[in-house]
Image (cartoon, rainbow, N blue to C red; front, top):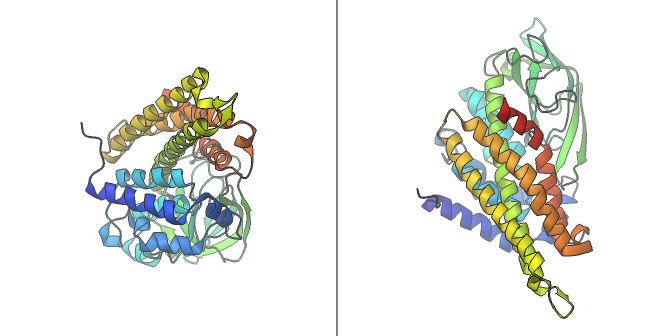
Length: 375
């Protein structure tokens, strides 16, 4: 079976790689991460102009018409470049819900500006008590009798929540707290009355927010899809995002391995490069093997999900478990071989390790996905 990129994927991989090499070095990334927004609006507009924001969307919505394989190519490169721009939040999560559940008019109103880089969005689905169960929703959405709804509750760790102009919010409209049925999706402007947003930088250089809804009123036109039937679109978007961050993690593992091998060739100890020590050679071979196995598993999971196979969810959990366990090992080896400088703020390997560690904790950690595999 041929696992090589097709012509379009090879062009996408090449264009993202050149952009990162020429315009997105580590020092530039650090400057963007430390800015007020936590990313560069100019870079985000460039990403949109180059067509990368359009990759997973249909041509009818102004997209590229790509699939999960194309998204995987992009996220692998973003991982290698340690990109902080909110692609996951805007395109994969918020955009993923809209493309599945929104009406044609709603997609024109919200999705197309997201694709064009003109609208910042975020998906507010996780809650303090929900852990990784996306059906565990206590945020209440109650019909007000005047063709509208009132939302009350809290959402946690909303990626890009502080920069978002539009929030896609999951609310409980019927059923008990953990029912998959009874979940409705709403499009809520970030400047709505009663909406409290506390944004903060995360340890890996990205941005998130805690959001409080206090009698936030929206009208019926804000409902995305059918009332009580929002879980399917939400669940599918989260699965896509899980696969996307797994691809990002594999890209990080690959670049950490490459940088560690290169460092071992230049770092001298006892008059010779430390890469000549057999024990370190064995450890770096293990890192390389782990990367290759993870990449192979990523390809398999991507193909199963892209083809809509019955075991697609198991495949996604398999790769997320893999990057959560093996990724930690690769990251620790890279840091240890670099020595004390491997955890210093000035060295990129420390920031790759932070992002890799964070990826394990979002969208279900390794233990949670292992349980899902066993279930």
